[in-house]
Image (tube, rainbow, N blue to C red; front, side, top):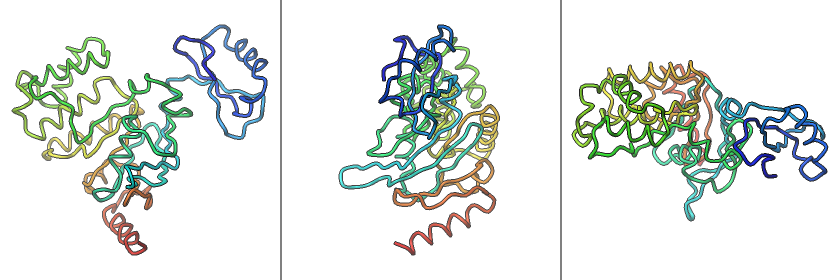
Length: 298
């Protein structure tokens, strides 16, 4: 059903899916009376609620309080990169994606970021899919991938200002200077990125991903190329973001570092879910044991 208002809705109203096939008019009238003229949209859910009921949500918080992946698969021709993967992440949680090369970690992050579409299955941002939320969803997602998405012929400061303006960040120049300070690159802000080491570019790209203060942060091997001091700084930054209520989904091979920052871990192999770890202490051994068991059963 189309939104009741053609303007960007301020509120989402969750209605049991069975009402969609029936006469919705009486329920809409009741919702309008409850909201007293405020904009809203109808979101249908199949959660077992009774007909004739509804729930009013604040759309901003509802969309980013949790992330749920349900039975997700992705095919590339005859090759299946992901096969029936499910997981959930909550606000204020750092969840690790573990697995060997080719396990499907990057594919999963690409789908969650809305940069790739699943072949089957669903991703819910709160109660809604990306299609239901629309383009505004991307304004709340930050992505750090293998491709760092930096322009080598621009300076570090110019890169951050450019992306800040692209995100619609107010006062992009000041935000860029603050980001350079956080990444310990303030003295190199006027230098071309082409002259940066991999670790310096990695730090700059993380700040690029955080400029617009996303609520969902997707990181693919964020510790690549970082020295010990930068790794410690990144761990502390991720902990701050967790405390601020961000959802962080992080793919990594660095299990020792992962133990310091993850709340739980999801293990993938050959595109399939192998298991999850809610206690990340001694993660390396349990991870290796899970992979050995998965190999033994194939």
